[in-house]
Image 1 (cartoon, helix red, strand yellow):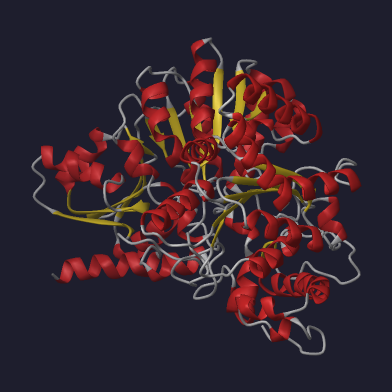
Image 2 (cartoon, one colour):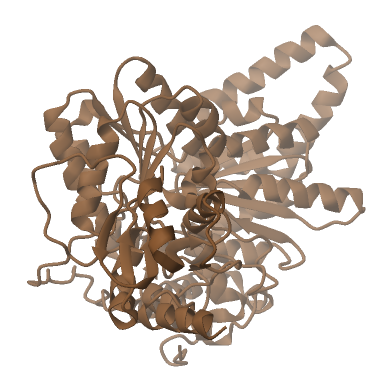
Length: 624
């Protein structure tokens, strides 16, 4: 992306944070203004995460201005707030490629830049990673600073508090910055709060505080009185009692868009030792009025959204295709009307999982547990114990975090929890951190669990209904985006458990398709004159049909949008071994690598999971 010198005179001179540090402090507000406009224009070209990045403009500038990056380590949490960081660290010319094939990654990446000290995709990892880095520096007698920037709801996750607890116990010399963008800047973030922040972060107060500790600890009764007095005063004026109890010196809340205050505060706490917790309040979507008014809608945007008049784009008259997420959203509302036992649970994915309508129509049966995937599953188990029918709407990549709970709290007790697993398979611009590449592999080995993969939208609806009726755990996994747009039958019909269906009858070759791979499998089957089977169930497999196929066909090919290792195809292999199948078997799926980011259909074509790729793989096997 070309940086016009006339439009961005300051930003044009910034090729690294060292250039930021050369600027006079009075010029930084102009840099912030240019950076905000450049971000808007850049994301307008390619689409991407938006509102959260607008909120971190001033913080990013202040961090690189005060700290000696990359010598000092800045670890970003919820990586979609790090676009300004990418721009200031030598990547501004490539901003328009973000989330595109061969372009910039959507999140910080160690492979992409020396300024990205920790790869980020899932939330709530920054404090633990920063603590590990700080302790490594401590053990090696080095002086790198470690700064964790957490926000956008990430502090709700248990592992963030685990790390805070550990850091306080170690009295680690690190800084945690909470970017609080879930509230407006209330009146207490005014003159009094700024004054208090200067006092609490200032050198004089800090030296007095530490000196008093050393003297008063020798006089236990007086020390306890002084300690209580300090906590009482700070607790009355700032919401930091919890963090103080964890061993942190809490500072804030302060206005995260006030560059002078940010820089002064960071320079003050930079001189302190021990764990520091800085609470800043920012506005998600800051500087672009439509995003400020509706930060959820502008969390991520498509190319072409931006107008400098700052008026929302006109609604399109085109009827959008129905996505799998929307199929789920419609089904769960319909099901809730029929069965009052249904409750919906999501770990902070209301919009992404299409639960907005449900949350409005059935507020008493809707639970957003925030970014707490482990808790969401155990909470569902508790609900199921008391006779309710919980549905956990969760992304495939986030379910990985709750694997222990899935096994021990749900499957082991055979509780009727339905997992609606969204974003299965490749996900496009978000890349490998968000891809649902492994769920069939890690789910298939769990006892008591039924696993289904729909081939189209209607089958998704019927499978969700089927899983809901079971008196045992069930998972229905479906991809991001749209499918073949199959007509949806509003009447819900339960599928026979573990039964596949033959979609095309051929000779010698059988293609067993799992989930959305049915569409390319059918196309390949026409060219190869193959029998094509919609497997539907990953567990239990249709062993009766498999046995028949193994007798009547000499070659069996499995196709899935999941890693080949341990996936659905492996389940077929295991069964065919028990039948002493003497033909040839070929498993097609995601390769044993972390695939990058780009257009999902292009990526599937490149790894051979389209019609042409399936045909080529089969012909190669025949030639062998």
